[in-house]
Amino acid sequence: MPTPDPVHNSPVKGEVIKRLRAESGIARAKLAVQANVADSTWQRAERGDSVSYRNLVKIARTLGVPVSEIYEDALDIELPSDLPEPAWFTQYAEQQSARLRSIEATQAEILRALRSNR
Image 1 (cartoon, helix red, strand yellow):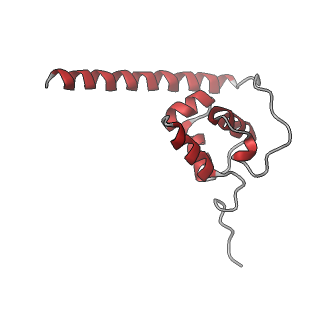
Image 2 (image 1 turned 90 degrees about the vertical axis):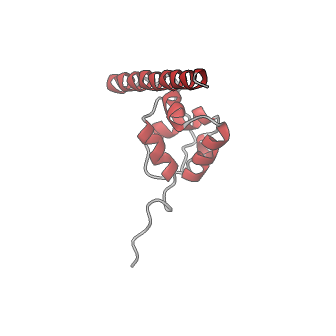
Image 3 (image 1 turned 30 degrees about the vertical axis):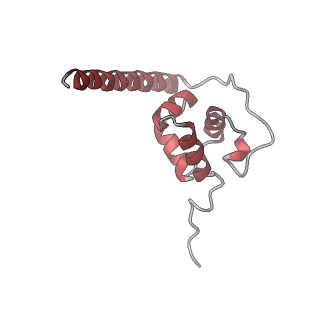
């Protein structure tokens, strides 16, 4: 008996998430920060791998779609938007946001330097 393919049998609609992200024109890392999920979680969702329902709700909200659009087994209930985050994750998200801002500042500085050397 063949082993089931977990990606193609997953209820997470990774291709839909990837398409919606591309349509948004926003980098995956930025969307992950906006959703308050780890970038690796967003990557797993785009591959159709297992992601917690709570994180799928956050991803759906960030993309502006109902959970049922990105998850076949969506519950008929919506989780409240004010669920508290674990302290470690809040700290991690803040660190990632600061890191992303630093990278963006460095990129802007490099672009300015390149433009001034023309």
